[in-house]
Length: 331
Ligand code: GRG
Image (cartoon, rainbow, N blue to C red; front, side, top):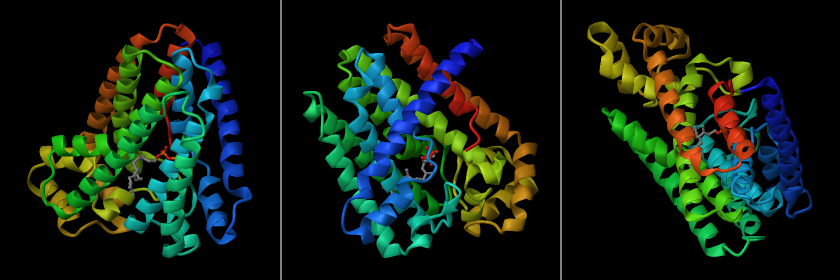
């Protein structure tokens, strides 16, 4: 892609992110009680990438709609996403999110639980503001996305208690936990934009595959990213003993001492902070970092293939560009 095109798309992202941010900021600025909505503003005004709302806007446009038909839905999906983050951070007892204290550490757990519930409720308010004559389909997509993310989180939690998780089981879990919401954004956007059945199907498939790649990338960043840029603790998944792609794939390949070291992560339900580098080196030795990169590339390519349904070249290319910057992200 030409640098001039990349600049054009990155300018659109920056401009739309600003607009989304200002809508998100005003969503809670005047609402009462402040004891609920001030902490809501804290999480919502953090430095999120706003990928999900951007996808709603871009996919609406890709089928001939205007961004204007999709802003409220874009706000709704970001609120839904933030609800999952707040509740997930409580469940994981995480202390950092987006480079700041998590909501339950900044306030307390009861506040964070209620803020999560409220983010979800206000998300529905925004979603229902304008459905472009498609309320039933939009509500079905949104609700399915929500049900699937909860089921994915359920599987993830179940896997934490299990000794063995296969790669297929892992892929099923991330399809539900992460990809379902990215898929949902693309379905909602293309529906609001007035897409045909074929267009919606192709764009939804883009979202699903992009979402799978996105989660494997997230697993990879947990070990390869720079803590400052990532905004979360490096090696957090290892500390928690999470069955990520890297751990499952490493277990599949390792023998002898290496395998025993990996089994310890599971048996002891996580490692100590001073062991993170040792496991990083082991992952490198077993080549699972490259395996992860290859799998991310595989799902990204599948995502891009589905974009043939988009007729307008510019609208297609910006979605290609987005997949590419997600591949290169460091947070
Ligand atoms: C609690 C119902 C419930 C679900 C939780 C989505 C989720 C399930 C948990 C959040 C933690 C997590 C690792 C989710 C996987 C998806 C993911 C990588 C989220 C982070 O999304 P980004 O990178 O975050 O878009 P920003 O901060 O940029 O918005």
